[in-house]
Figure 1 (cartoon, rainbow, N blue to C red):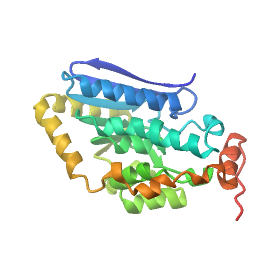
Figure 2: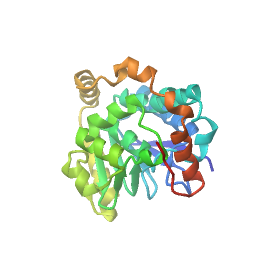
Figure 3: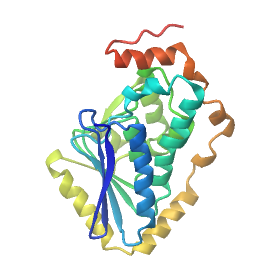
Figure 4: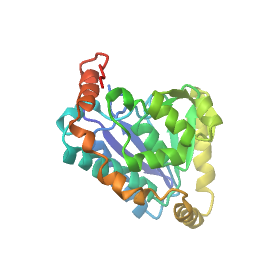
Length: 259
């Protein structure tokens, strides 16, 4: 299966499911486009009071690396992937005026951290794991995505994730201010349900106005992140290091990076 991002709505709550069986809910290009469409639909639905985004057993383990060889090694294809597919999905979440709760269990890596960073409230199982170990794959985080993650996890944690491929547990991420609540895996559904029920009881227009204010007050204006940096961000597409990292992963071997 290629994976999907689907939505079910009931009683003013939209539940968005990230699903990619056998791949720990890794995001394919099609799934990024579906994420954008789903959140566009949510934004247009005045009846919704809250959104829960979740996966099954895992939140999202990153990108679907099996697709990467088809577009990552050419600059324009790489730029299109990050600036249109990925950022299109993330921007739709950031533009959503309905409060979003991330229900996080299992792996929350790379793309999963980015998606969670777009949420207003983050509740995790005590078994959840967080990171962005893309240095092992031979490529950096795209500039807009990095700005988003730095704002959400903090610069110290972002540097640790990206420069040392650190993987952090839920307790560490709560201590660092990324998670609102950490609960036992068996209590995760109930904890999220309690949160969204409370949200549903509050004034919906006030919530939407608050979210608009939060966007206006954001300390990092992601949409205008260093235009020159974005313009030159994908020149590494054809580099030997990039190709070696992605190819080693798909070949299930340790990458050999040389200077």
